[in-house]
Length: 310
Figure 1 (cartoon, rainbow, N blue to C red):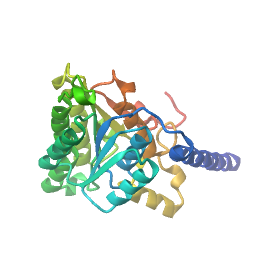
Figure 2 (cartoon, rainbow, N blue to C red):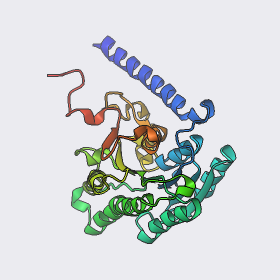
Figure 3 (cartoon, helix red, strand yellow):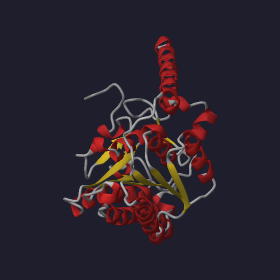
């Protein structure tokens, strides 16, 4: 018994070391990989870019790395916007960057940025509605006001993005090479929107609504070549989940974070950004109306006891 326990500890430590090495490799993408062309010439809007460890920031950097023409980057908090702009412009001086302090759930702000893209660049190719908040209150203490605020930030913002981005993407402009309607709308949902067990009631409801809007809107926009897809992250280390990781580090149990999925680890923002790159690029031209989980396989199964299959 003592031997088995010791071996399990050793195996867990070895797995965690491999996890750290894997994540370090993923996060060094920009340093080691040559620039690509998958977003060449594309005009893009991304919301929720303020977190230094966030999915929005990672996606903005990756879009720039892949040759985006102009990035319109929005966040409710202005704190990190200047840093993001200078970081992109220093590394990719050919990419135009416009940062905007705005509430993604404010209709005027979302309509304005879509119109700004049309006015300045003559088109809008990609809108990534990534802005969102998490909640922590159990059902018993969730108020109607906090429930509605979660829905406003997480779901209303997506509705507004789909509504106004699709209107802009229907705009044709032969002068900039856009002779047909079309574009890609990407929305951040969550595995919590697929089934229970990954979030609070209000958060899960808001993300289920996001998944539903991606599916429904794809049919509302049929034959326009405007695609709408949802990304459903699992446990990703971002500013929003920072408390979970801080708690684990304080206890010395970081290696256990994310152990419930078959990869046995948590994810990082750069991994979600890669999916946002695929969906924003022409590589995903036949992917539409989907809720794509990026969760290490967590949502692939009903709960099981590890090592037992029957």
